Length: 467
Image (cartoon, rainbow, N blue to C red; front, top):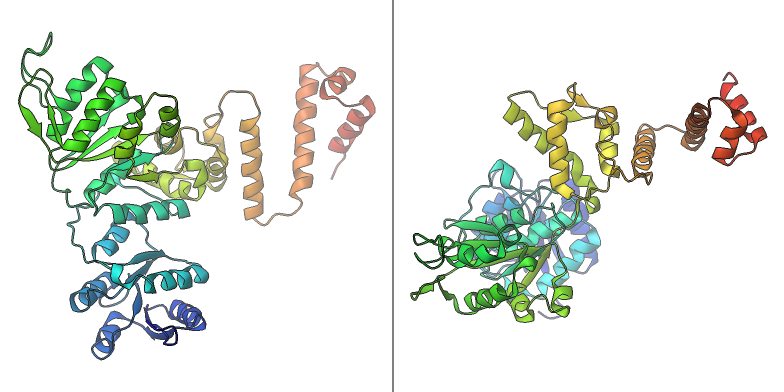
């Protein structure tokens, strides 16, 4: 395309405000922009003119954006389409990429980002592909949840990678949901109708792991009374998820490398060469690059597994997702208990947001189940949480979290003078605790608090002075 000729860009969205601001930004970037309020109008117009790039919303009256995408691709397969939506779940993003979308833009979006995306896409017009993969809906408990930018980026990556038969390494701390990523990659892939087999390699004793992976013949070792089909054979045609791959013994790393390279292996004690077609998705919470440097993990195996790496962020980096996750877990608990669902109050949610979550999403899920069973009311309060979020280390993290939650709740309520209120309450609690500890002896209480007696007396007087 000549630099002197503006690119023709169309924007299709039933939201007038979105149409206006996006079209304006694209025009200011030098493009020839036309805006449409629905799929029908765009399809009518494309009969006489084909744009260089098209933006479309997903949810619109009449034909939605994915239907429009499908019809556009039938007529003009090379037309790059950018799908926009406020719904950034895996099903939406994968559906867009399956339909041939060039990119998925999450709403609300930054206009500079949208203009930069248009520039990149117009430079890669021939990259658009038309793919068709059957979708298997996720079970309610088997779907990733998240609106944080890091999770939206992850969802887009899953939508793209699901279509490609590449090995994927999922990294992330314990409890972040790495198996859910693997299941999503399988569910949205051409292998969806075939088995998904998961194995936690760290949970199997080293002497049994080889048989668990590759199977064994009868009589292969003491206790092997009959043939056992291993996980690779079970997953033939589908996906094998190997969790905690960093703990795999060195000897098995060598065998796994051969299977990944050749797609074949022998059962333990067997002579028949078994051939399989398996997509391997591995996961770890460890630093595999560091283990390679230390000689504990094979570099060539890491290269085979790490064709694409997906990082699952810890919960503390996506605290905005906590309310939705908590609601989901409380709903699941209510279904299990055959009871109305409970919900967290505002200050309780603030406490959850302030917590560091070393156990990540799994820790939050466990807490929600405890609260669903133990909290007395329908609304779970900060008091119901009690010491649940404390780590017992005595380093003050529990009261700091409570103070942070109190401050956030006050700010959200529009209160003023929070600093003065906090100082007054801190003085009161410290003075009362110190006097209780010393049996009311002010001099000793002052020494223990690191205050002069006169300062302590003045604070006591201020505390008792009527407001």
